[in-house]
Each structure stands twice: as structure tokens, then as C-alpha cells.
Length: 190
Image 1 (cartoon, rainbow, N blue to C red):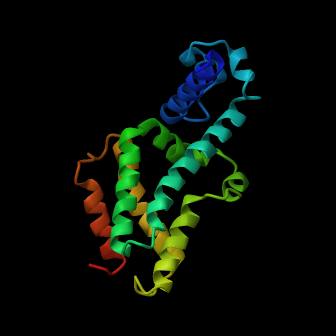
Image 2: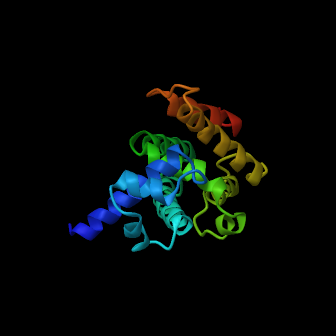
């Protein structure tokens, strides 16, 4: 790996960690440069500023996350219950092994303009709505308001992770199974 690529990766990892822990608004270019061990000018070789960096990193990380989850959610070779359970496990594993990246996606999304977020091709809420709508259309779940139930599912799945990030809830090896069971009950499948 060449040195400029390594430097860029170090800068990006430092930025993600700071955005996830300090917040988007409170993180400065100076903070990122110091954490990465580079000059502020080195950051400007790759990005025009903090906002551009944050937006590009957010899109990259969110695209990777939604790709992982959608591969499971929309694999019609598996029954609905299994797809939902594996998607939740994928989300919880991603959080466990990529905590700062996950927190960056989850906690900084509100720092971007709404029009930017809504224009994304891979938006998690739209993915959840499509999943619920397809399951309802296929008769896998009872008729419901797909938008409402997608929102309820997203809340049930993500809120425990937010609480864990703020040290208000312990996540155990069984948490994803408990969340899955709760989601299935919410959908009237248990």
C-alpha cells in the first residue's frame, strides 16, 4: 500500500472516530489532523473541508452497511422470519465489530441537511419500508401500514444500540435474538 493511501485511510479513520465520539458539529479539521498525525493541509489534499469529508464518509459507510443488510433482507430463498433475524444479527454484528463506523452513521445523520439525506439511493428507512411492503404483498406478514411498521421495526432494532452507545443498556450475545422475537411479535408472527 502506498504512503498517500495509508495517510488518507488514517485521516478517514480518525475523522470517523471523532465524528462518532465528539459529534459532527464539534469536530474540527484541526482535531482530525491532530488525531491522524498529519497537518491540516494534508486533509485539504483529499477534501475541500470537513463537511465534504463527513458527507463522503457518511455515504461510503452507509452504502456498505445497507449493502450488508439488504443482501440478507431481500434473499427470497429464506423465509421471512429467518431473513429478519439474520438482518438483525448482521446489524448487531456490524455494531459490535465496527462500533465507531456504526455510531458515525447512526449518530451523525442528523447533522446533514435533510434534502441530502432524502436524495440518497440507499436510505435505510426506504429499505425497511420496501422489506415490509414486499413481505405483506407476499402474504408473509398480516396486512399493515408498511411505513408505520417499518418505522417501528427500525426503532426496535436501532434504539438498543443507541442506548448501549450511551452506556444505558448492556448488549449481550442474546440481545439480537430478543430484538428479533420482539419484532416478530410486533408483526403478529409470534
